[in-house]
Structures are given as C-alpha cells and as structure tokens.
Image (cartoon, rainbow, N blue to C red):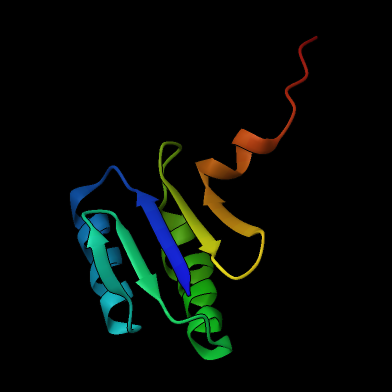
Length: 90
C-alpha cells in the first residue's frame, strides 16, 4: 500500500491532480490524502504523471509526498523536496 499526500495551491491544478489519482486507481482517505496498491504499474504511472504533467506546473508552495507503507521510504516532489536539504547562508 502507498499513501499519496499533496498540498497544491491552485484549485484547478489540485482538482485535476485528485481526478488523476482516482483514474490511476487511488482511493481518497481524506481531502488531500489517497491510498493505492503498491504495484510497479501504478507507481510507475504515478511517478510519470507527477514528473511530466504536474511537476512543471507546480508553484513554490506545492508539494506531493508518496509514503510506501511496506518500506521505510518516502518520495517527495515539488516544495517538499527542499525540506530535507540543508541550507547554506553566506
């Protein structure tokens, strides 16, 4: 099982993203949280759609996280990627 959580500011983009998750077979748990079977097909399609269709449209505040329930692994896209990086100040 995988959990997909997102925070997308633009209403139209957020609605499109949730409809895409449902089309890929994910089920809504909460408003911005979905669950899906952890199959290579679903995960591959999800990664492709996020990187190619939605990623270029994300603003600085948008983020998507994919939590793998059977592994200790989290995939992050958008602004959430920067939360794990160290900041350097000069």
